[in-house]
Amino acid sequence: METANVAVRMERQTRDDAAKLFSELGISTTQAINMFLKQAVREQRIPFEVTARPTIEYGSESMEK
Image (cartoon, rainbow, N blue to C red; front, side, top):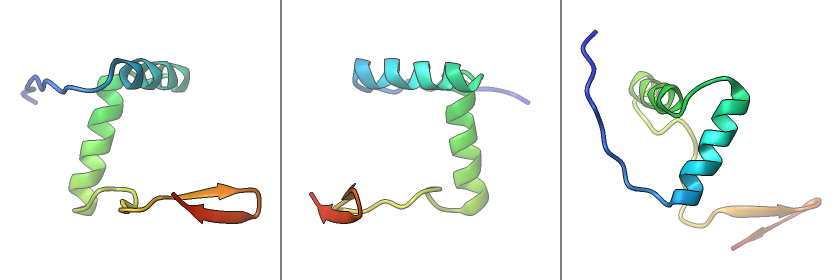
């Protein structure tokens, strides 16, 4: 299958934290991004909930930001 390069701008710390996590999971950042994109295409949606006001849980209580 033919591949294409994609350039993405993000915070350096986010990139580094993600790369560390993916390494611990045994995959590369490229593999993780491809997994995300393939899942989004398969489901025809972003494969997780996106909200304008995320909820933060504290113990058994939850609070909005």
